[in-house]
Amino acid sequence: QQPVQSPQAVILREGEDAVINCSSSKALYSVHWYRQKHGEAPVFLMILLKGGEQKGHEKISASFNEKKQQSSLYLTASQLSYSGTYFCGTYRGKLIFGQGTELSVKP
Amino acid sequence: GAGVSQSPSNKVTEKGKDVELRCDPISGHTALYWYRQRLGQGLEFLIYFQGNSAPDKSGLPSDRFSAERTGESVSTLTIQRTQQEDSAVYLCASSLEAQREINTGELFFGEGSRLTVL
Image 1: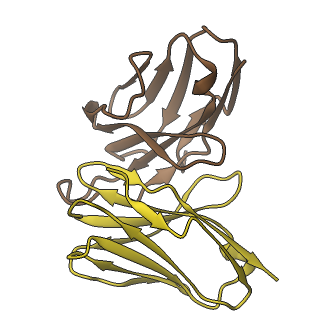
Image 2: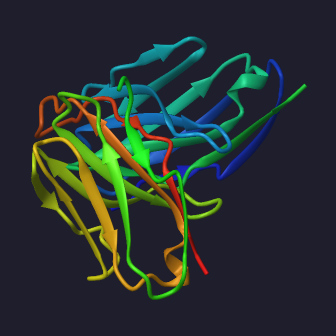
């Protein structure tokens, strides 16, 4: 079952914050976040495990609410380099990705 | 090599022909995934290998698609009698399988094989 991401797209100015949400209809063991820049392969950002653990990567952090079967990715003080498509992946024996959220950061 | 290697990087073929796409994972990575990405779309799961076994083939779109892995290393994705809707980038990723039941390790993606079916 593919996780659902929202929003589908977001446009930011440099320095603004954004939140990308990922939800699943099934219980989750772990959630992965990846970023794909145009024409490139997806690159790993972080993994979150059961327990509401929050992980961080530079100015990008995420949370995992096991009970709500949701994860959120927080991008603070966005930079031009943050532009790309963000995918969450949920793991239940195999890693299935959401449809992606396209993030554009403008100067 | 240091990363996941895929070949060919680009393949143009005529409708009805068979194609083989190859993936060389990072040495020691026991898990290997194939995904398909159509233009402007997300990552569509195709198949997953744990060692040389494929516990889950549920993502293969039709019986024209098959995959194998040998020596817990190289994997080949074969598409028979290609159709125009098969045109996409086929991405391979590998990971160190960690805590298999509840998680997989970080996935390292190759650059993909871009398939165009005329």
